[in-house]
Length: 313
Ligand code: SF4
Ligand code: SF4
Ligand code: SF4
Image 1 (tube, protein in one colour):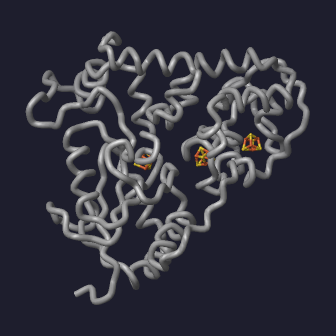
Image 2 (cartoon, rainbow, N blue to C red; image 1 turned 30 degrees about the vertical axis):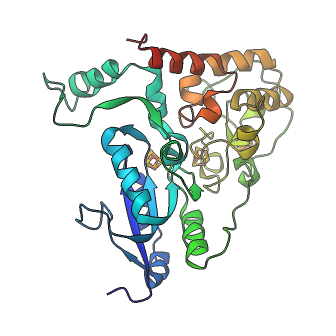
Image 3 (cartoon, rainbow, N blue to C red; image 1 turned 90 degrees about the horizontal axis):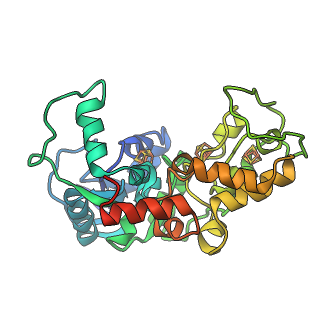
């Protein structure tokens, strides 16, 4: 039996499974965790349908169905401490991009149009129905610790678990991805927004300096910046920085437009308009959270209002 070990439950809601894989990705550090923890309910490791009493509960994924809601409530009822684990749980994650489409469009695409899952039937009784909105976990149950990231980097997973096991506050900085990026911010001469299909950026310099959108300055570092350090601009998968979330008139697009216009020859209005046109991409990970949905970002407000009113069919 577990003895003095800390009892851990995990469960996944609407998600891709990547956050559970990330826990296994702790590599040898998983042994340190297992010295102190006994894993009980865990969809990828145990075949237990009910929810035993636990000290720590890791919830991954957002809430999009009645099943998700029920699972989240069961986890809250049985676990003393709940971690919202991963960007889906914290901000709604990529599923939030579904708010740009009606439920009918989503079901039709998944069950009829997708090349790998074409059927004639859209299930309406066997599976839990899609709710109107995608909901981050803390809008349904109380959350004690937030660990964004898509998935969170093992460094931050270990630190989060260690802080709970050792009963101390987590040591996590509030830095943006730029803080870990090795690219140099210089004043560039780009006059238009570029993409990797029409321009190869110089690996020494900041993407923004070269006319490429990079969300690093608006994104919380929970990943150690692998993308910009390996040739790919940051798409914001760990979700916004605390500054973006807490300043009412600061937004992902305003932060990026302001910084990019200083580092290039592109007018801020041009960048703002581009980011609004491509909002489904720029806000893909965080648009489901009210903290971002309430920002003055026209398209997201409209999409959510359309979904709520049922006029986006
Ligand atoms: S946060 Fe990313 S990795 Fe984790 S479940 Fe969501 S989509 Fe998957
Ligand atoms: S904006 Fe992107 S490329 Fe520029 S410093 Fe920040 S993370 Fe690096
Ligand atoms: S650099 Fe950006 S896109 Fe890449 S893992 Fe980090 S937050 Fe996600």
